[in-house]
Image 1: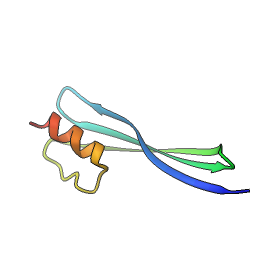
Image 2: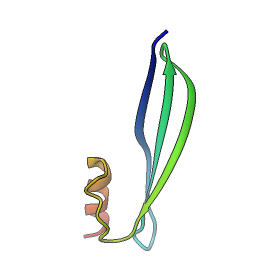
Image 3: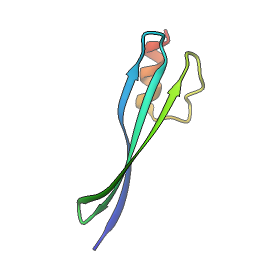
Length: 66
């Protein structure tokens, strides 16, 4: 019985006022089968510091906030 935890960004949305909405999902897996899932949401206004976010989020923000 092997338990693993994976955290991934599964949704990025840019609103019309250029706010970037990010949803992360944390999955607990047992032998490859998901046994638990939890979401965490964050939002970033234009020109916010996103240096601690994933490269994917940083790239989306850079394009949206040009």
